[in-house]
Each structure stands twice: as structure tokens, then as C-alpha cells.
Amino acid sequence: MYQIAFSPKSLKKVFEAICKETKHEQGAKNVLGVFKNYPKGNATTHGIIEKKNIYWGYDLSRGNRITYKVYDREYDQPTVIIYFIGNHNDYMRFLRTHAKG
Image 1 (cartoon, one colour):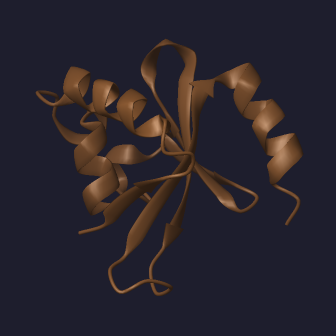
Image 2 (cartoon, rainbow, N blue to C red; image 1 turned 60 degrees about the horizontal axis):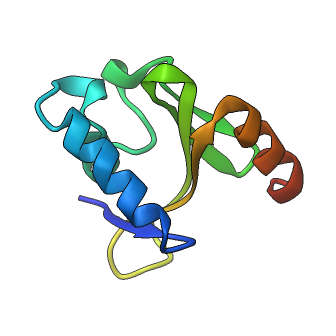
Image 3 (cartoon, rainbow, N blue to C red; image 1 turned 180 degrees about the horizontal axis):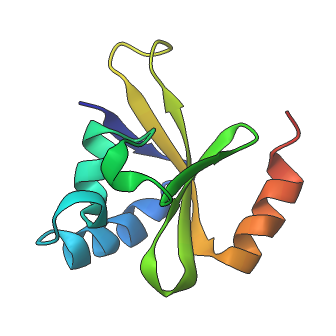
């Protein structure tokens, strides 16, 4: 299981609200389950999770997206750090300013 962290910390409240909305969903629609078990994707998340540059992106409904990095070996426990939650236009702006590598 992956540990979930946030940068900036203010994203935690937004993420918790999204998880609360989707906690009764199954498979790829259960956001917390996806991030804790298979943040890089599997067969049920095909087309929902994609990698752009150094970031992973999870498509939410209503045109929103969660952007994050997955660290498998850098920490004691595998970790997902969430960097951005917002709409697609803001996501593209985020990528232009942050994904240089």
C-alpha cells in the first residue's frame, strides 16, 4: 500500500472531499482505493491514469484532474505525493510551469 502526501498541504482537504464523494464506488472510480493500491494504474484504470512528463494524472469526472508523482523506493514506504487538483486548463498551465524534466 502506498502512503499519500500533499504538496502543498492545503490539497489534503480537497482530496478528502473527493474521496468522501467516491468512497462507495467500485474499481477505478474509488479514488482513495486507486491511490493506495495502484497509483500507476492497472486494467481497471486504463484511460483514466496517464503519465505526462514526470507526473502522473488521474482524470476525475466533471473535467477535473489530480496530478501526482509516485515514489516506490525513495522513502521507507512507497509514497504518492499529490501536487495539483483542478480543471484541465489549470492542469495544462501546471505542466507548462513545473514539468521541465
